[in-house]
Amino acid sequence: MTDKTAKRVYTYSLFLGFALLCWQILIYRKTIVDPKLLSAIVIIATIIGVVMISRNYSKIYPIYSGIKLMFFTVLQSLISFGFIVSGIFILMNFYLSSGQIEIQQHTIISRSSMSGGKRHRNERKPIFEIQYNSYYRKQLVFSHQFYERRNEFKIIELEVKEGFFGFDILENKTLK
Image (cartoon, rainbow, N blue to C red; front, side):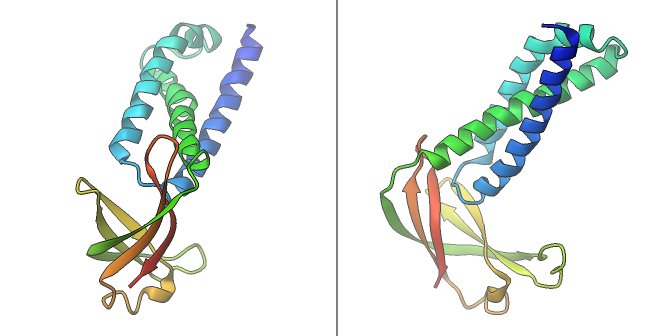
């Protein structure tokens, strides 16, 4: 592979990694996956990526050396390998899921809120935290329409289905 082709591959993989990261964030809100698992996947893939590209990266970008070379190698590996592998994992779990839906009810543990979107900062969105499967806490964000009545709700009803890798996917959530 020539240096020019390798630079293109690295550049395209950066854009792919960023795109999958953005898509992954949207899917993560609808999936019950422990963030520690996703972090472990990113770290392991990044380490493998650093080992794979470190020699080649120094040949392609001779202007970097020492700490700068290591920083850019790790950054390239994090985005290109870490985010792509974790993105593939979470997207496969989400899109290759089973079709069987189960209804669950969970008690609300705590309440908080966050500001709205770009032009709707004053529209606060309520965040409810539930205990899911006795070992994992999940925060669920609801529409700003529920903010004023957030203290009235005691239970969240979830419609979930099992993902490809066994992690649950939220189909629908209802406040009660």
